[in-house]
Image (cartoon, rainbow, N blue to C red; front, side, top):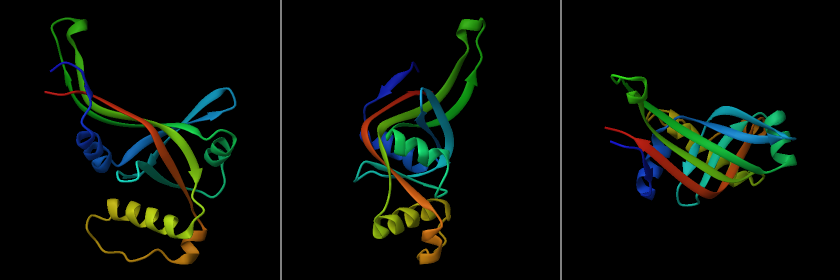
Amino acid sequence: MPKRVLKDEQTITALLERTPVGVLATCAGDQPWAVPMNFVYDAAARRVYLHAAPTGRKLANIQANPKVRFLVYVPGKLVRGETPCRFGQRYQSVILAGRARVVSDPAEKQTALSRLVAKFAEGRELGPIPAAELERVAVLAIDVEEISGKENVD
């Protein structure tokens, strides 16, 4: 199947919900800076939530310039061809553009972290996150302004 743009919001949302890691790209002065991160996507709010240390390069970059990109990529099989130009990689990908912020509202922070934990808990019920632990972590929210996806699948 040839490469195609994903236009179906349900397909994009499903990809974001099942993929565990994405790459956050921020601006560091005149240089791009990127880091892989676990995340959870809130489709209703069109928002990505990430957790981070309460200080560091990521937060400094976002405070200086909140514009970010977030990439999710699911590799598929390598298709070998008879000539170099007949090789191909199967994949699905989504790129989000938006503005990132540090979540300051305790209720939003609790909800975001609970959803993030639920994504990775494999069905185990872990209960609410204690207040002391909430204080030790930063939660970032990316309010999505643009979203696009592509795929090359069989």
